[in-house]
Length: 168
View (cartoon, rainbow, N blue to C red):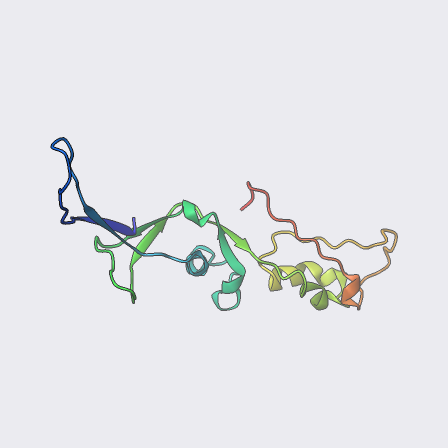
């Protein structure tokens, strides 16, 4: 919906053509607006994720849209901007968006190092709203008396499992 196509006839010469042949010349121009999904995701999340812990200032680089090509962009007015640079383009987006969060699994162990296990759940929900579910497991399994994470981040393993298709 954010593109228009125009055609104009081109001058042609019919020199050398037989009576049963015709030469038609057309020039086509496609004018459209490309919207980057990298820019679209935080803009949509700003209103769609209100009250979920999403902070546009802190999380805009951590969010993306799964299958953005399924969204439909419709211009607010009938004119498509032309030219090399467009300052403003007003449009509406329709469809279902599934937001995906990036988790920095390499930085997380350093933040967990030495933390009390009882603070784990509140820390994750407060600092990492992108994590839908988190579990802490002790290894070896019989180390039940340990109440904190190891102080050495190298001894903390992180496994990231993407959500199933049915989860949102």
